[in-house]
Length: 115
Image 1 (cartoon, rainbow, N blue to C red):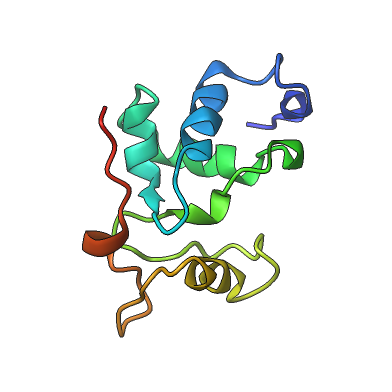
Image 2 (image 1 turned 90 degrees about the vertical axis):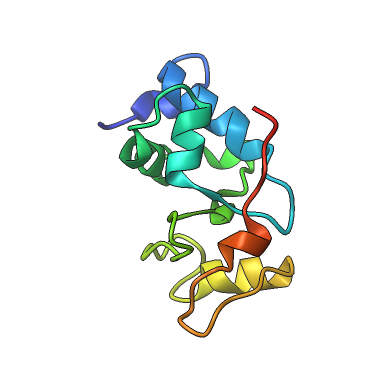
């Protein structure tokens, strides 16, 4: 889906709005999975839609999109974070620990919500 309307928050899809509100709440030093955010937004089977929302997140929202990763702890393959390795650098700067395989230690760093 092309989200040209995302530059106007009032016109973006309701699901994207929910995703952005949730993503804004992920605290420093924690990560959330695409599926986790999808479930919190009311559609547990929409992990890919969360990924699309992250790709199209308006810069004006200043969202911590780097804190959204795969359920396994694997980082995105995106170069959206200042080039290869950019997402990892951002997470390491927040104290996120990585396992030997390069994945985030989800047991230690996954955001626990009260929902």
